[in-house]
Image (tube, rainbow, N blue to C red; front, side):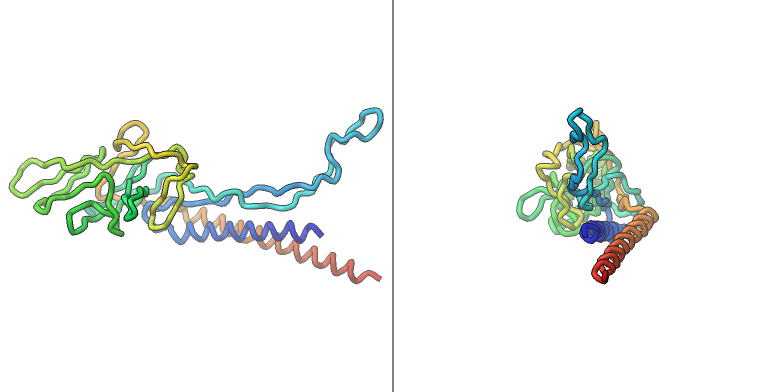
Length: 261
């Protein structure tokens, strides 16, 4: 009975859907996190009676036909790159991106990763780094005698050095954009890697055309809406239950057939 297999594909699809929703809820307080959703597609069809097939010598044909679908499959789990809420932290090296763009991060193996999480610190040499100690590109080093750090909306980094009345500019933070942001590969730790699907990064200055601006002493929160996620979770649970009920119904039908006298 095909219904058993069809309902099983529905249960597996909703199981994955719940996993995606659970991951979103688990990261609802993760800085710069972007939620995912599960997209599904119907499986192949069995053509019992193909539409358009000829039914007589006079040329009459089947107008609709008979097709039986084989169930559902997971097509993708795209990442929704909408803007998260921006909250004031009052930490000098917290930076939020308002608009499009990613911070560029130099990984220990020499590759470049990308992130929306702007919770930065300084290492022992005064270099601007992530919470894991990865350097923010282009490299920006704060002098030891700097007593105030100012980061403009355009990414200009200025410091006020002891004994000086005017701030000195020491560098500029740049952002990277991708033509297909959903094509980025998430590797954990709030980091993404470029893929052939995402396209090559386009580096530019914050505030220029197409690029977001920076907000110092702010962080971007996850774009997870807990109410929406709970509603999606309930819908996924009900869909799972209905597919399970179909399996129970199919089992009862097979049982009735087996008990025929």
